[in-house]
Length: 263
Image (cartoon, rainbow, N blue to C red; front, side, top):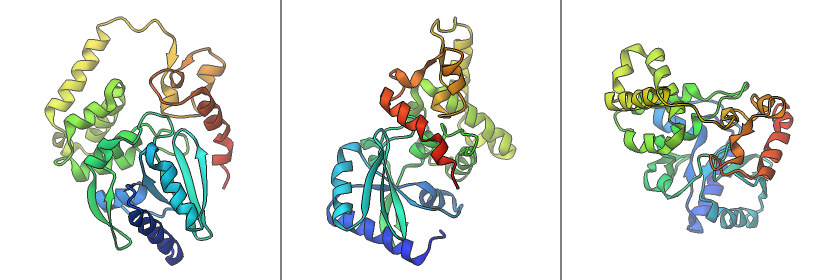
């Protein structure tokens, strides 16, 4: 995986410091994608996933090693940085749906990053969290296609379906796309999974729609559905129990949109 030698050493030191302190973390992002699929790409950072209850201790260790630390977004992400790069310390997803819990660690995959034995985020949680990333500037659908292509026979499909819960339509949309992207591989998704989700769709279409005027698109893109809330008066489901975000989290996450587009 491309990374400069100084950055690689920074990442190794980060992992060594956390291992020495006995703190649990999982490697995610592009390095986990490469672990499962062999797909390599340039990355500007190194993603580790942690439980929120471990976050403060983890950042304390990294601060004592001389790295600059900050809680960038209180609902999901902090950063540790030095002159050679930065590490994203992630405990949730940007939409507040995919919180890191014990299940991530119980089903992690063992491997190696920069010569250090590590555990990678489970493939099921990678699909779950990536499935909601549908911004104009970033869409993680191809990552999901490659993860299914590489791992279909080892994916814990019941657990994956459970992870999506009430957002099962999002999972179904990606599974339908998989059959379009890879026609010859579509049968690698278990028939019971497709039939079960399509059955849910059939039952839902036979029942009356909800009375509440909500927009769930804000779980897929923090920008593209703001017009629905701000101009058309639909309720943003991030203000319901569909997300762990607070109203202040939504404001901060929205305010950072322009900053994210800077080169």
